[in-house]
Amino acid sequence: MKLEGKQIGILVALLLGVVILLLPGQDSMKYRFDPLEISRSIAEREDHIDPQTLSEWIIEGRRDYYLVDIRNEKEYGESSIKGADNIPMDTLLKKETLDELPEDKMIILYSNGTSHASQAWLVLKTAGVDAYVLEGGLNYWNRAILDPKAPGPGASDDEILVYKAKLAVKGYFGGEVTSSAGADSKAEKPKKVFKRPKKKKKKLKGC
View: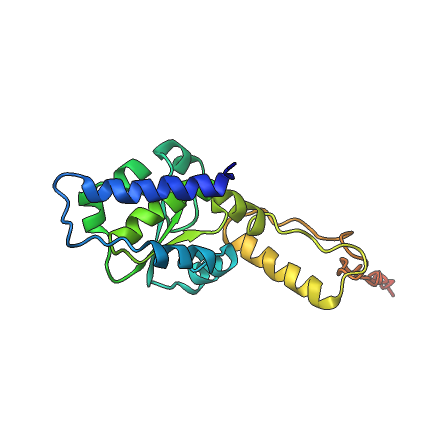
């Protein structure tokens, strides 16, 4: 049976979940492993947060989540999502790190893609942590939030309004907002302002 990339990621994650239960010094009473519940969460996509939702939470200033970038320090330094803390995966999965994660917040994990974050997600779920994965990782975030697709010719007013809203979100996160003129015939174009030439004052002749 040939396994796809996502299936391989899930299998690796399952192995990680089992391994962490067997690590010395772990409090086995704290950890739980329910394959049926985990499979249901994955199948119904309850384990994911989409980029649009996360961007709204960031802009709203919500405080009930903790965003974690599990990539290495170099990658994190080059680019990251606003408000994310860097906890590389090998550090995140240590018992002392798991114990320090905030218990009153949902933990949102992301990497460049989805596989590594999904593996870390399973370990955290096994440890009883309320964890989620950013759908598509940083790569998808960059496409969806920092590089929204402009509507094509003939787009409706609603589509143009949605695109303009996405541009505003892009600007909030530091993306360069360029003019969308030409993307659609209905898009607003700069208006030419007509300036009436000033009349020259006539000089009064002396008596």
